[in-house]
Image (cartoon, rainbow, N blue to C red):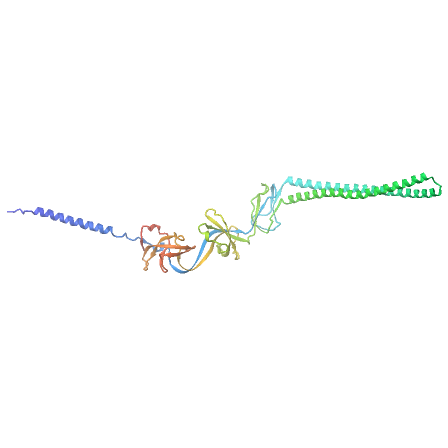
Length: 417
């Protein structure tokens, strides 16, 4: 006969509860331990990152900017007057001399004015000639009158002398003698007056001729001016060089002052660089530069710094000191580098993609075995185009990753594969 065991069910229940409690405790401990574990470091392909080694030694501070080659002197040639383009003799790109005619303009009003001025000069010259002839004729008449009076005076003087002699002898009445003497004195007075009139007439002739000559000179100068204005319609280069632009066409009407052409000297070029305003603060006149034209590098020096900022950049003009390489021409795109200063003994590294001068950033420093990289805080100092000074956080010989690592901002450590 089976004998029922007392308390077996209770013991079994207690055992099950104990097993369940132990199992729950183990699960909780495993979960707590797992939560305290650091996240696994992500893997990064070494070939996809750019790294550099921290160095100590001299560092050259530089700034870089893009720009173009431009002529040192540009001659803009305006239209001398209103007109219509009749012909174009030279096209852009051709070498020109000082007197090379580029464009011929036509202005009928100016042609008519020049012709009218020419006829006015001819009329004034004819009037001057006529006046000169008439005054010469009047002078001859005055001279003839003087000669006539002088002859009459001499005859009267002779008669008066004869009458005085006869009067002394009592052969002629004294009244008759006095009449002869008076007539002679009157003719003498008239002779003196006519001589003075002749002298004054000479001065009057010179004055009248001078007035008419001045009128002729005035009209001749006006005619020369009109002819020069007409000749100026042949637009000339004005300087030796190369014709850069000619923005007009045959038949086009232009007004006075319209730019007709642009002439430059291609062998006298300068570089015009655009430097970011944040980097231009340390640029000084006379600093050394190198200009890369893609066909060669030209040395130069800073010759002008624009005092204003345009679109976030400062224009810096560089005087070229070396010979121009083949293919150098105005408006050629160039890459310029300005040397700011030379630092003799500093700790520096290649410039990170996000590294700005005088800032604090974080970089991944590669471990000695090259398998891992740990994030460190780095304080940066003065910067250059490709390098930057390290003030704190790194030592010479450390290898750091310089490429953009924003994808792993949430990790302090990565594994390199």
